[in-house]
Image 1 (tube, one colour):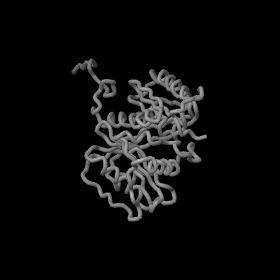
Image 2: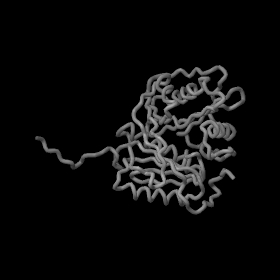
Image 3: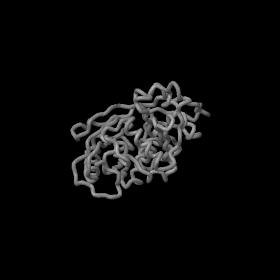
Image 4: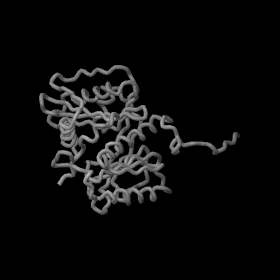
Length: 290
């Protein structure tokens, strides 16, 4: 019987593992940066460890920018220390709002630490597959965000269409503002019926991978093909890089059937209210709902 040495064996999640070791590693690092980059631009804080990356905007964001991304499995031995540091990190941000934790692996039960299991959404991948048909419904025009006015349209439709309940009633600047527009990796689009914004989408490209960052359609105009048209526009904009995204079980069938995405695995999603801490006094984190 052959005897194998454990010396030099790697899991693929060590800190010095190359970014392109696997598509999953690329996606997790892309996902972490897609939260951290706009968070930093808006005056938020970040925490980076070998096992996780966390972003905190210090105010409610519908859990979009108050997010923890695990960078390797959270085991029983190290989970308490990591969760202690996360509690301290988010408590120091002050304010209120939901925090999300995203894991590519099953996790220990976190309910005793104040987390609530929110589901197991599927991760889908689309390899580069040549041109995509971007012909959309005739009544819809899709325009890339190029300034504060269209960004405000994007934010309002995103908050109302997702919906982000903790940002209701919507107030300008409560989600994003023009400080995020300087990052070429993040691109945003708004779909209009005439002059009325009705759907949105975003794309974040980093580490040789494109992430379909977020897409929403207002409830009153769903079922008109706007979701597919917005997705096709972002797929075309990504060019020849593979695309990945965590979808809901509602949007997954269309992504697979109409857009060529393939199911890879399911993630684990936990959410919790922000741990209690001192209120944050930070004029740079503007746009807080009153």
